[in-house]
Length: 490
Ligand SMILES: *Cc1c(COP(=O)(O)O)cnc(C)c1O
Image (cartoon, rainbow, N blue to C red; front, side, top):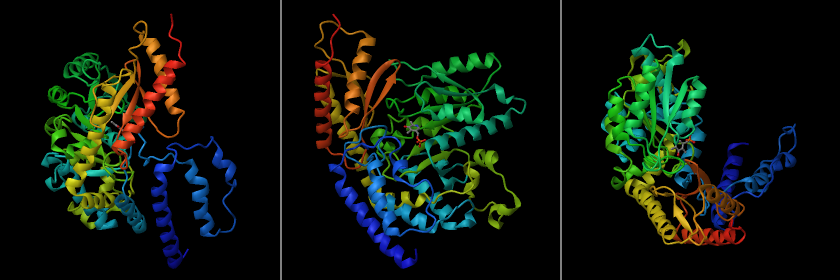
């Protein structure tokens, strides 16, 4: 493809993407294909001679789009929606045109310098303390692929700091702490690094958030047994129920154990701190006081196309001490002089995508006010949904509504006698089975300390009040049908 052919194909691609977005609302949310559909449709080998690009572009429409789940569909309420924007897409397009692995400052100064600036914008947007800013030259921020990478990077840095401070500690005695509600990124980090991971219990009474006393008891027990606690991964806004660990309490406990690193995972909820009114619920003050590292994902609720996970550390030397490997061929004048950031020493890989470009586009195009407006709108939509759930005789909330997430379940008040926990779980599995068989709406299930329940997550950029009402009507109708087909045990 030459430049002029690219121009033509590019115009067509944008046209088709616009048509796709116009058509979204009328599409099913979920893909209707069967496993293996694509292998059947494609040849087993790449073509021997090159094909016409028009045919290739047409096959995207014909073969790929039917296999997409439409995450940007306004009735997508599953997982956590990924609110992408055209600004983000254009940022990605330009980044891809510069096609730059950006591992050193000198690879393309703009890549490093824009990231350093935009990470400071983002830090201030959500109210992080100035120690986390790149301008502090002590702490700093770096973009990662995902919250899992951010956490893994924090664990690697924490381990390295622990070993530096406790040179006689044996690797097999190290313990990483999470809770039973922590995203699987905690277990994954333990698995990858071969480190023990202890998931602390949380209760419904504490709204599934970890308390300081629970942490202290576990630390004391493990230290008495010769173990070496080195990091706690705490969460503000858990994936299952949007729960908040008690960061202030945890921070105070952590301060009594000098070598214990506190990583706060705010992958989903963190961006809501752009609105001052959500900072308290997200424990911003405690994060600023105690966290060694903090992560949020702009690729979830932050209007920026995947991938855009942002990680801040209180002391950048913890990252570079753990990750700086500089063979001769990577040495540069500025790197040696220490006058620039070489981001390769701030994450696990060497090369990296030019991710800051899309976040820059988004933050400039929306402005702080536009960004806040969008977050508030999602929270308001959730309030609408919650009031419908509360006034319904069929449903109950299983956990307190959290920002733009509601966890609920079917709990009919019309049964002859109160249902056992097991019967209620079975009933809700049937109910969820009916919902997930539909293709005009998508929700996901979860289990909270043994209670099977359903998550309703708002955040897709095109969702309006009308879609929330529609969703509630669908849920009510399916609840009726579930009960109609269900035989209440005598
Ligand atoms: C979604 C989520 C993650 C995982 O995010 P990735 O970027 O896909 O790794 C981690 N933690 C929480 C709380 C999440 O909601």
